[in-house]
Amino acid sequence: MSRIVVKDVWQEYGDQVVLERISLTIEPRSFVALVGPSGCGKSTFLRLLLGDEKPTRGTITLDGAPLVAEPGPDRGVVFQRYSVFPHLTVLGNVLFGLEMRGSSTRIRLLGQQRRQAIETARAMIAAVGLLGSEDKYPAQLSGGMQQRLALAQALVMKPAVLLLDEPFGALDPGIRAEIHELMKTLWHETALTVVMVTHDMREAFTLATRVIAFERPRDRPEERERYGALLSQDISIWPPRIAGAAHPSSPDRDDPAFPLGQTRDDPVISEPPGA
Amino acid sequence: MRWINYKPSRITALTLALCPFILVLLAYAIGSAARLADNPADKLLPGIAALGDAINRMAFTPDVRTGELFLWADTLASLGRLGASLGIATAIALVVGMLVGMFPYLRALLAPFIAVVSMVPPLALLPVLFIVMGLGEVSKITLIVIGITPIMIRDLAFKVLDLPHEQLVKAQTLDASSFQIAMRVVLPQTLPRLFTCLKLQLGPAWLFLIAAEAISSDSGLGYRIFLVRRYLSMDVIFTYVAWITLLAVIMNVALDWLRVAIFPWTRGTAQ
Image 1: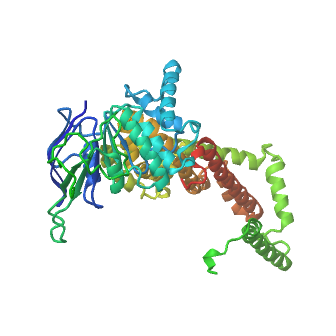
Image 2: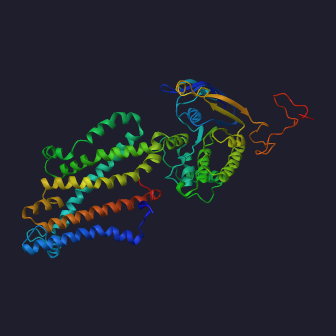
Image 3: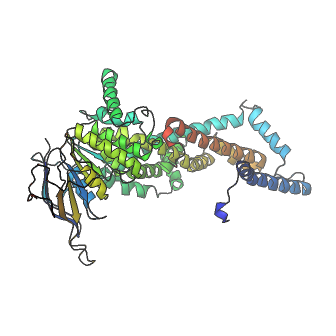
């Protein structure tokens, strides 16, 4: 599986401390949302997980092995923009990873292998609801469809970890709700750990199993440079969402106020207050 | 309404586009008529009839001594040199530009050097080229290559650097190696820019070509212009200038058309 352990990570750019003392364990199959105000370093943290940057101090391990300092096929990613290749069609974008995999010199697949890859890619395209648009270029797709394509492109590689950097931030609410449903389905059905950066609290609490907040406790102008952001909140969603299992309550409702006979680790309320 | 919000219709736009051309032709015709009225033997601004005669003489009447049609022979010679040098420059610029744009170590090694080399005025090197490489085709082609390659390399390297970092990261998460990224991500997105880059360098390329031909050659459009200059044959010079302009315009349009035909996703974008 894919347990990510972050141990005492600091990230500094020159004199500017961006993140400090970040320690965190992300369990396999969880869906972690990183929230926080703009510029608090949550995207920086995601880039560390991605391997696009190296932490100044501290270690990050994936399944016990230190993270390689460059992006690789075990970690898929979807950005808010520029996630898909503008010069490739929908099919070409999803096919890309399959064509690159397992070789460092092959630039396209031929014959039987190519037919198989196209079949796999088509299944993935169908799973994100883009069937019928295989021959379109990204510029001809709406924003929501582009993000669906980006998801398909990443997931066709079957990564252990999927990293999302405000992937749905630029979409309008109706489209966003649809793609949330898709995201949930994909998370339930694929062996996937998801880490998502978002500034949308509702999105975080709708999708995640755990919401982690980044915050700069010292944010006066004279302090801003020498103090970075810390983890200020670590909230587990109740009742717990479990990958592959139906969630007992609808996402837009409050959590049940009465005990439901499930165990939880805070004091059980034996009677509803005021009874 | 503000001036920035007035937009011409298609027909108005076409009419407006034609205006400067007509105005220039008109000014020429008036000037030419005035000078010819003063002195019927004036050679500076020949009339329409004289120009027509020059076209006929240069393009359609074989030379009595060699049997050549000068305009076509000159065009062939010049386009040969231009084509060879543009081909060489394009190949070098594409390879070096991609390497410099993609790999930080090569960028550190080559970028400052190329920046300095691109500042060398190529025409000042022409005497050296003529002495070292002789007066034949090689020195002329080399001049054009030296003149336009460094700028094309820099332009393409910038284009590569301009690719969103997200795309390179995404390609890496899709298990692509440096070579695969070069061939499948960077190259296809740089090639359209190569066409635009080539288009912008057509002007300098013609300049260097004509300069080289003017100084030492026995054929070519620039050679002919500087040959007939001695006889004050403005009719031939104007004909040749118009012809060169037409060739350049056709190349421009053809490069744009080719780019959109080969890379359909670049339609309507400023590459």
